[in-house]
Image (cartoon, rainbow, N blue to C red; front, side, top):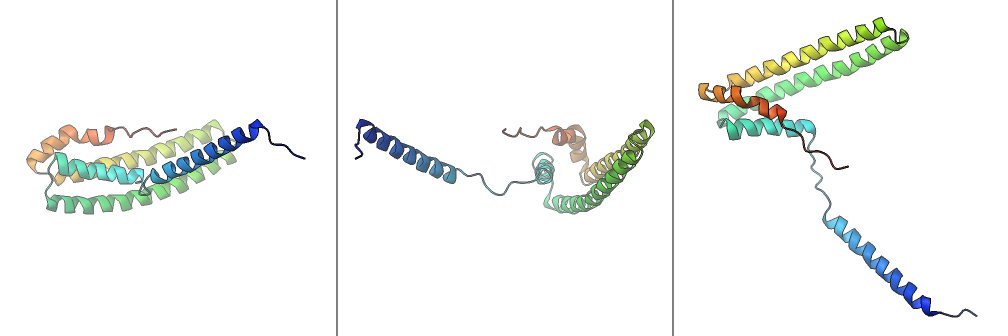
Length: 160
C-alpha cells in the first residue's frame, strides 16, 4: 500500500508553479515575437541613401523618381557583377588547389581578385557621381561634404 507523505503536497504545488511559469513564458514570447519583415542589408542601405537624399538634401519628388531609376539600374548591374565574382572565385580556388597552393598560384588568384574589386569600387564611385548629378548646385555642395556619412554609419550590433 502506498502512503502519501508530507512531500506529496509540496511536489504538487511545485509542479503547478512550474506549469504556470511555462504558460506565462509562452504567452510572453508569443506576444513579444519580433516582426517578420526584417530587411536585408541591401534594403537597409538603400533606405539609408534614399532617406539621406530626401531628408538631408531635400530631394524633390522628381529627383527621387530619377534616383529610384538610377538605383534600380545600379542594383541590376551590381547583382550581375557579384554573380560573376562568385563564379570567378570558385574558378580561382580550383586553380589554387590544382597547383597545390603554390605561392605563384595564390599570388595570381589574389591579383585577379584585386582587379575585380577595383572594378567594383570604380562602379560604386561612378554611381555616386551619377547621384550627385541629380543634385542642384546647392545640393551638390552638401552632398560633397556629407555623403560619406551614409557609408560610414555603423550597423547596430547583433545580439548574441
